[in-house]
Image (cartoon, rainbow, N blue to C red; front, top):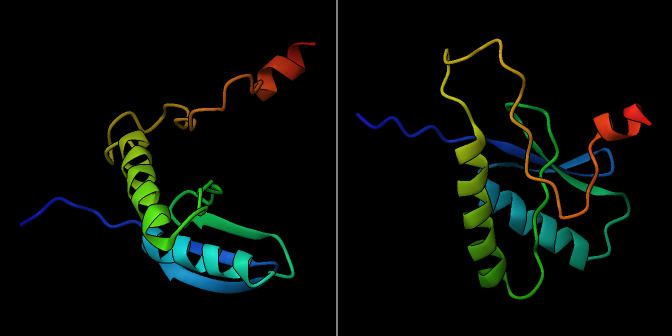
Length: 108
């Protein structure tokens, strides 16, 4: 039996849910909503953590899916195995170069 765990994501256009399932399906829904001129902010959330997920859906659908597969692997590598170090702080996603943490602003 495989230990692979599939994680679900949910995409919203404003308050309306437009996709739920694997990251690749959500990336396509995100791309199509943006191309159709979505009315509200279009956001993708990780169902297991509630955190928003940034996806690059520029270019063709094939290119967007390729980048999404890499992003899914990156997000999976950030997850801690269940039961291991449960009391540790959440693992933060890597920030863009020059992005400051909330702790930096609080120290000011």
